[in-house]
Length: 497
Ligand SMILES: NC(=O)c1ccc[n+]([C@@H]2O[C@H](COP(=O)([O-])OP(=O)(O)OC[C@H]3O[C@@H](n4cnc5c(N)ncnc54)[C@H](OP(=O)(O)O)[C@@H]3O)[C@@H](O)[C@H]2O)c1
Image (cartoon, rainbow, N blue to C red; front, side, top):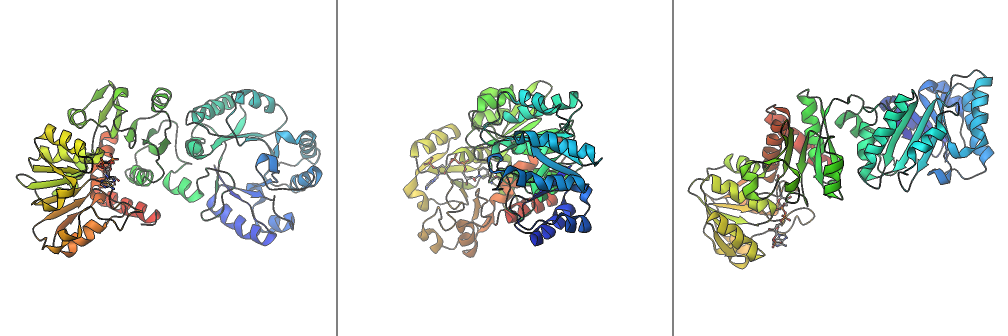
C-alpha cells in the first residue's frame, strides 16, 4: 500500500489535503503536529476514517509538535475512541504506548496501533535489536524509519522486513535521505505494509521522500514484485538523469516485469560487491564508466577499445559490460546523413568524445579531433588514425559533419557555443551538425547552425539510441521508438526543459 502523508496547518487545510491524499493513496496519514484547531468529528463525517492514520509527531522524532506529552497524546486517545483506522505512537512515548493499547482494548476499538521508531542520523547497527524490543508490545504494526548514510542500508531494511515477515509481524520500514530512495520504492515488494509519500506539490514531511505521483505512476511501487528484474543507473550524481522516467515508462508500456532505480554510489567497489545479486542490468554514468571495467566478467570488443562501459547486463556467464553511447550517436547522425567517406570534426575527447569517435571510425568517416586538453585529442587521434587539431584552430577546419562531444552548451550554460561567431558567418548548407548535449535539446550550437542552413542531429536522439540498445539487451524486447521519443520528451519537460 502507499500512504499519502499530509501535514496541514489548520482544520480547513486538513480537509482539503485529506481529500487529495485519499484520492491518491491507499491510506492517508494526517500529521496533526501543526494543527491548533483539530476537529476529528468533521473528518469522520467527511472521509473514510478506516483509511486514515492519525500522527502527532514530537520534535525529537522529526515532527513539529511543541507542547507537553499528555497534550500530544490526547488526540490519539480520541482517534481510538472514534474508530480511526490507525494511530501512530513512538516507542519513545514510554507509558503512553501501553495506555493507548489498553484504551484500544478497553473500548473494543479496531484502531491499529502503529508503534514507530525514527532515526534521522543513521541506520543503527542494532536495528534488529530495536525491532525485537518493539515486536511484543501489543502493537499491530511496527514502523522503523532510519536515515540512509550509504546505499547498502537499503539491504539492511530488506533483511529487516524479511525478519518481521518470518516473525509474522506487520512492518512499515524504509529509509530517509537520497540514498534511501530505493527502499521507499521497493519496501512493499519486500513484504512491507506500506510506503509513505507526500502529495505532488506539497512540502515533504521527511528528507528524501518521493512524491506519490512519481511512486505510483512512474515506479508503480504497489505493483512491483520480488521477482521483478531490477535495473538502474549507477553514478554520482544521478538525480539529473531522465532514465528513471524513460525506462520505467518503457518497462510498463511493454508489460515487462521490471523496475529502474537510481543508485547514488559513493564507493563503487562496495556497491558492486554488496549489490551483485540485486540487479539484472545497469546503466553506468560519470564518474564510473572506466573504473567499473574490472567488475565485469566479460566486455564487448567495442567497449574494450573505447575503454568505457555504459551498460551492464547479467548473463548466465556473469556480468557483461558493453557501450551503447557510440550506437546512440550513430543513430542520431544517420537519421540525417551518411558518415562513410565524410570529413568529420569531433570536438571533445572525454567519455562521449571517445565513444563517438570509435563509432565514426566504424562507419569509415575521415576524422579530425579537437579537445581543449590537446594531449587527449592526440592520444585518441593516434588510436584511430585521425588528425588532432589544436582547440584554437577548430574553426578553420573544412568538414562535412561537426560533432560537439564537449560539455559546452549544457544547461545551465545554455548560451555558450563551442564554435566561434566567425563559424556562423558562413552559409552552412550541406553541413550536418550533431550535438551530444541533450539538455537543452536545441543547444545554441544547433539553433545557430540550423539558422545558417545546416542539417542538425540532436543529443536527445543519441540518448534515445543508446537507451534503446540498453533496453533491448536487458529485456530482449525491441522498444517502440515513438514511445521512447515520447517518454524522453516528457522526462525533459518534467525537468523543466
Ligand atoms: N546524448 C547522450 O546520450 C549523451 C551520452 C553521453 C554524454 N553526453 C553529453 O556529452 C557531453 C560530454 O560528456 P562526457 O561524458 O564526455 O564528459 P567528460 O568525459 O567529462 O568530458 C568532457 C569533455 O568536455 C570538454 N570540456 C568541458 N568543459 C569545456 C570547456 N569549457 N571548453 C572546452 N572543452 C570543455 C572536456 O575537455 P577537457 O578534456 O579539455 O577537459 C572533455 O572533452 C555532456 O554534455 C554529456 O551530457 C550525451
